[in-house]
Length: 461
Image (tube, rainbow, N blue to C red; front, side):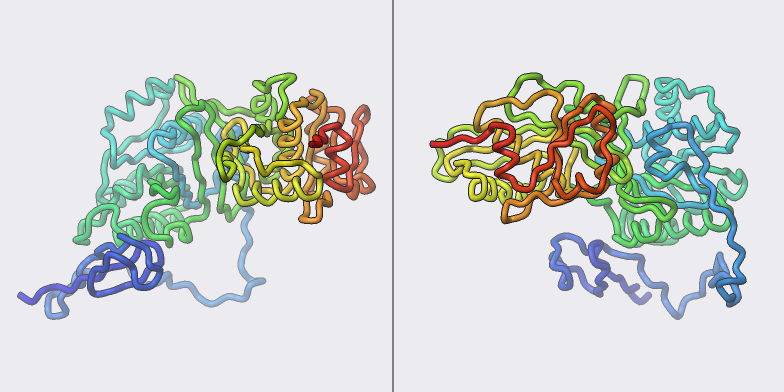
């Protein structure tokens, strides 16, 4: 019998090769070449085709296509619905990724229970746990009486048969890396298995109008394991983030065909499951130390949601030849740039100071509006002078030390006023275009040196 051909595919870039490489010749990534299914022998009998090729659709003019209303089905979990843009869309294929133990299965089982309470036919398919383990988790979450159908199976042929017979409205697949097609020789989790399993579920979701959520494992770099095409196939990509040392978990949307991206939902891990944190701003600044130098309150924008964040900095005498710069929750290169601007344009001596920056609560800030509060926090720690408790700071800083305007100023100011911050330091250019709420004093600044001097944080000698 002739030997069947084997193809190796890079999970990072999709490069195909008839032989295995330790390093991909295309993208130069290490250990990414995975074996795909062997090609069937042309001399052998052809396998019966399970599905007709193509969809059989005819060509239409765009204005002749019926535009049905796109409705979001709320799940009843406010933070989950916020990230999805209002709820789950029928026929959508969603992907939820996150580190092991962060709470993906717990959250999705709670979503299943809420959907079942709303009269939906819900099916939870697990390839990693037994049905008994799912029952024990449901008991802990108080969802054991919900009408949830549980199937412990990882063979896609059997799953497709069960889906066709049950006809559910909402399905969770935990996880896509454990699913496999029996007619393919490669192991579960390989590029070909993940791609084919996801394609089968995508066809089912689009054909039957069933919403499907796939749980995805992540690599050590934080990306979802498997072929990159998996994220292109789905309609929504969610990342569930969190630190084991903190009780808060963040659900972030990085792709959403039915709503805005970069939305953020906050959950608290409790003994009874995930609890939605609706007032995230108050939660993030509730543990702020009063009267401490180096602490600044800043209003960031996560999608369309304003959130108050406690930004902390510590500047201390360095005993190293090269001072240390440690950053947690912000871009380290951006912080190094701002420290240089702070020393050059504001006259603060930082060349002999170790600087540590931390964003309290485990958030990761990427917008440039954090520039001014970061510089003010460093200057406050350097001069050992705390800021007044009612001040919030926001603004972008250029290389010449100017304070530049930022987006959505009115929403940021409204959020600050709601939580009692009635003095707001902001770019001077933005003050002329907005109307501040009653009782709120705006402190416009044009340069970084002016901001540092206005707060009395200048340190000479």
